Image 1: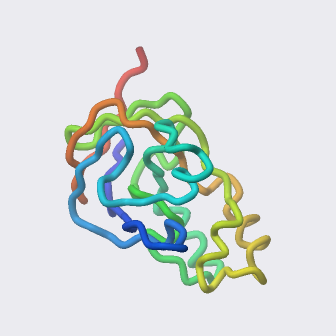
Image 2: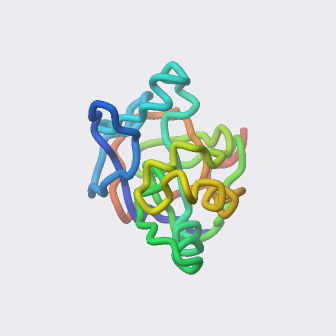
Length: 162
């Protein structure tokens, strides 16, 4: 099994904007609240900054799938903080991952939501179709067990369950 980080994505806080789309950066510091420099309006306003949703992980296969279906999706558009590529393409709740010096624990699946209509190619007219395509492909939330720095190109090591 070999997973690697192909992108790290953030969106700074902007008044009246959702946390999508995010822009890529090469390296980031990760703390208990998530990737420094990233703002997630949904998590901060609706989820009271819950630490079990500090990071959103997404496999690049999801983006590739949507592009093949004709959607102009790019890395970071779906709100993921870390875009992964390689095997396994599916993560599981409770799985612990070491990325650089950072350790994350997968907490739960992320389900498609209406906030995705903030993407100009989705908007109100296409949101239901887009959400249906993303069913079981939206990614996974993770909490930060150990803070550290991550970089594009880092290998993701799956740690043994304890």
